[in-house]
Amino acid sequence: MVCSSFDQIEYFPLDGADVSTDGKWCYLVFWVVGKPTTRWNLLRKRLLEVCPKCTPSASGIFYFIPEFQQPRPPQIFLLKFWCSYDRKGLLHDVTEVLYELELTIKRVKIHTAPDGRVMDLFFITDTRELLQTSKRREETIKSLKVVLGDTMMSCDIEVAAPEVTSCLQSFLPSSVSEDIFSLPLSGELSSGVLASDSVSIIVDNALSPSHTLVQIFCQDHKGLIYDIMRTLKDYNIQISYGRFSANTKADGKKITDTHKKNALCSRLRMELIHPLRVDVVSRGPDTELLVVNPVELSGRGRPLVFYDITLALKDLNISIFSVEIGRHRINDREWEVYRILIDECDCLSATREEIKECVRKKLMGWE
Image (spheres, rainbow, N blue to C red):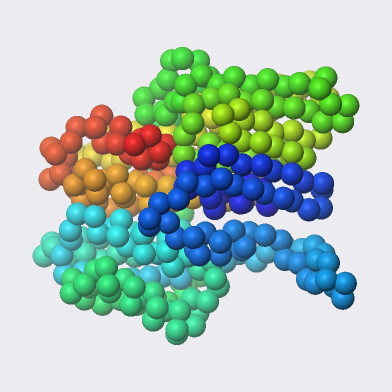
């Protein structure tokens, strides 16, 4: 739950946070820096959604209801719409609408016809699980109409057929080097790998008789606490108390296994130095933006990556010709891969390094 909470609040600037758990209950406090456009109701709703379900007893005390059954996979819907012409920033505007409606993008296919018309195919899931209702679909189409205006020729939402969803698996071309999936810890970085400043991790087993203190000092970036929490979650380490501020620390059950302790420190350092990979490569005669991020062992992907990518390209006034989003297992880890084919007419407006740097800064919150 703690990781899921930081997942939802990741894109709000934090001054600090306190986490305290006893194995049954969890108490979280966030000091959030708000903006005039901050949608507090949406944030509150999403935080409530990740909290375990409880039921009040006769005494008024809430008890946790354990989920013995594995959650069923969300139903996938196909959102298809035609626009009379393409425009820069269109894809980001659509992505923003879907995010506000709590619709999760699983795959995107964009096709530009010779006459300039654009067909967008979004394979999405609904966090509210209401997209099968006509009211929810009408709400979605109406919101898209507001953003797309008269350019939207048609729009339809339907349940994706099983034969369609089974064909969603994308394939990486041989030209994509596996170096981008590697995780170097030295100062020499492969092209396109994001790197924060050096990371210091101190593990102390002497301070507490029953807990391990982990102190982490590193450069701040967007999703920093999320990267720490998802790593601890992947190692099945429970937090008893944590404070995140100028000095970040988290402690859980005492870690006495030296191998596990070293593996945890190595993994934390790796995830904080290289939380994302960004590169701009050649795809035949065209230019492709490649963004890669690791997937949690629970199957959750990093939130709002596609939102930030499209926003960065919109800021650069660059149009997107096509998009492929898929998951791939490389080096015994699952990765979420975003392949964005850039309109060749816009490649002259910014160099490859400028595109990479702009996307990189947007994803890391280093604007």
